[in-house]
Image (tube, rainbow, N blue to C red; front, side, top):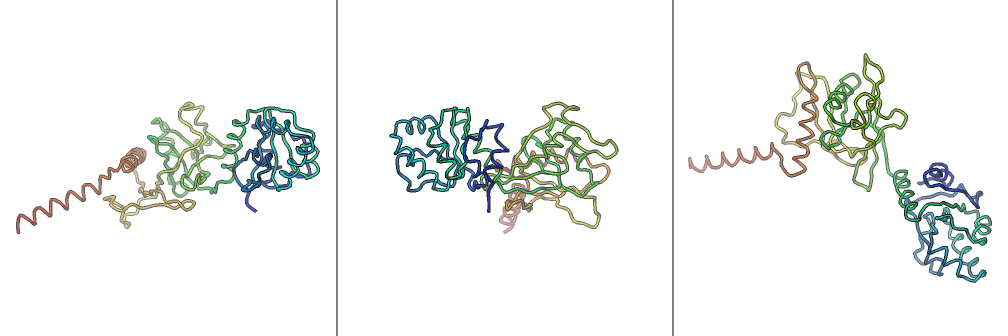
Length: 315
C-alpha cells in the first residue's frame, strides 16, 4: 500500500514538529496514504459528508475551544465518531490541554494522538512539505547536478569520461554543485523534476588522483546548493570520428526521467575542447530557448525566406 506508517511519520518528524505521543500507541501501524492534513471542525459539528478521513487530523485553537464548549456526553460522542472514521492520527497544536475524552477514546480506538507546541499553520506547512517529499515518485541517476546560470544541468556519461572534472571546472567559475556521482530526482506536482544529493556525502566530490574533496570548504558556501530543478541533461562521451554529431541544433532531443522529457544534448569529449565553456553556453542557450529565442530555427527560417525571395525574383 502506498504511503508511510504513523510510526515512520512520528520517528522522522518528532524533532522537526516537536511531537509527543500522548495516547493511542497501539495504532502506530496505521498508514498515512495522502500527503495532506485536515482540520476537522465540521466533523466535530456533526457533518461527516466528504470528511477527509485518510489525512492526519490537526486540532488547533478553534477546534479545541469548540470541543471544550460542548457538553461532556456530546463531546465524547463526536470524538468517538471522528476516530472511528479510521483516521491515521490526530495532532493537537499549541500545547493545548487535550480533553480527557480524547485521550480515552484514542486509546480505545487505537488512534495515535500527539501534542505539539507549534502554531497550527506552521505545523501544517512543515508536515505537508515532509509528506509531499515522502510521497513524490523518485529515482537515482548516475550523474552530476549543478546550477549553471540558474539552470539545473544534469551531467551524464560513463565512468572516467570526466564528469567530475567538468563539474569542478564549473564550480571554479562560480557555479553551484548540488550532487556528485549520484543524483536523487523527485517528481514534484506531477511536472517538476527536483534533484538532490545524498545527505551523507553532501557537498563532497570524488576526483580521480585527488580523492574526496569538500567543495564547500574549498570554494565557500556560495558554490553549493541543497536542491535544484533539473532542466537540461548533457551526456559527455569520448569523441568517435565515425559518428555524426549534431551540428545545427534543429532537432530537439530529450531524455525521459520519471515520465518527464527534458532537453538532452550529447557533447563529444576530446583533447583541446573546452567542455566547461560548452556547458556554460548550453545553459545560456537553454535559457534563451525558454524565452522563445531558438537561434538554429531562427536562422533556418531566415535562410528559407531568403531562398524563397531569390526564387521569386528569378521567376
